[in-house]
Length: 125
Image (cartoon, rainbow, N blue to C red; front, side):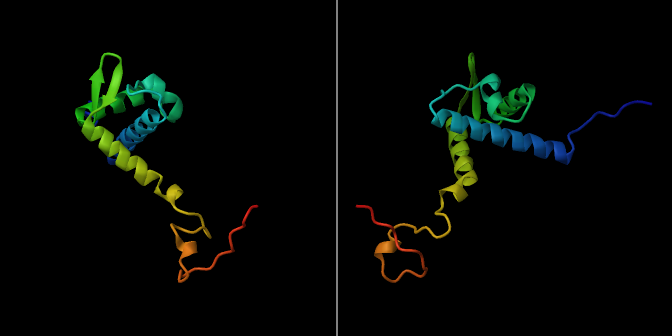
């Protein structure tokens, strides 16, 4: 009985896509926190729930996609990769950037005809 060549199942392909996106977002966060502009699987691994070999594979796939470039010391964003990572990062955290229930947006407290009720703001002396 001969084995058939294995191709990626839809689930495996989706897992690889998720992993690439997660690595891209972590790299964006990593850079934004001032940890550096060059990424390695070892440096990213503590922030991911993914084996190092899979992080390395995702970085290689991001190079093939034109979102990262391979350097002697690791990987760095291409301009397109940095823009894509920024969009994805912002989309992932958009819900955390909205006001909480009962909080006002913008200058609504100065606007007398706002359409919601809330407790008055406490003034401190």
